[in-house]
Image (cartoon, rainbow, N blue to C red; front, side, top):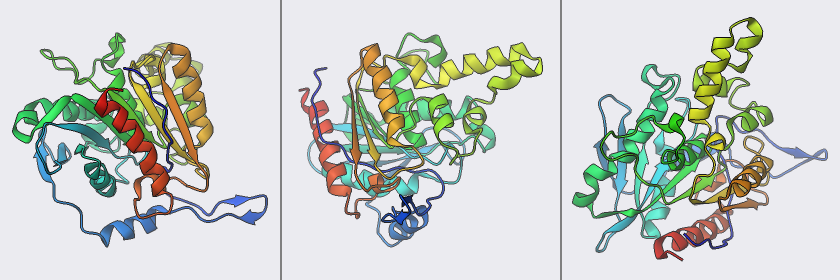
Length: 324
């Protein structure tokens, strides 16, 4: 697919937001998780259809389909929260509503997280993959165009969106959740809103999810060999190769990554490192930093930064939708 250049927007999500200080002077406080939750509770969500893609409480999605004749392009929307149950899909509903105004159907996924019994590795990956692949089961009934599918993820959900795009690569480690018959659902582009990209780079740059969150995600630790268990070190590397999109490059799809200039959870430098590696591997990666935005503004359409976010997303999705 030919690439187009767009303006991007910013924000991020994880678990707690602090007042930021620059040079001893208090900067404007970015939107906090608590404030955003209060705003969301005060707003009526747009109607959606809840559809289960598997058994259990957390294997379902919310489908929103625009008015008008289809088939409609589809955005798979994936929430963040450090891969933990501190957050659920509810905070992504305003974003899904805005994507609907851009005439995209949205399939907002819920899934088991790593602190829930069935979410430990590779359960979280299997759930997200199964949720994405379930679009095949509902596409005809709801007028969905599976030839135009984009994965949209925020924070740790950005990692899962990139991972979904990587599933179709030749990397055998990405096989989790694949259908034996049809293979993984094709993803045609990724929108990462303050996305976690390279897992080891993220863990080195931020402890906002906990210093060992990546180890928890993959259920292993790189320090195992130093404790005399070389087999555990091999396990860690194998699982990292199956979970980290950086080790699956190139993804083969265009990517838009948006970061907040004041984000201290997933800093803009994290996106810059991903872009360099992605472009070296042959991918088209655009990164935009929104001055003054923090971690959550990217998924908060009522904030002053949303115009920049919308311009970025609109341009990128237009390119995917029209094939330019």
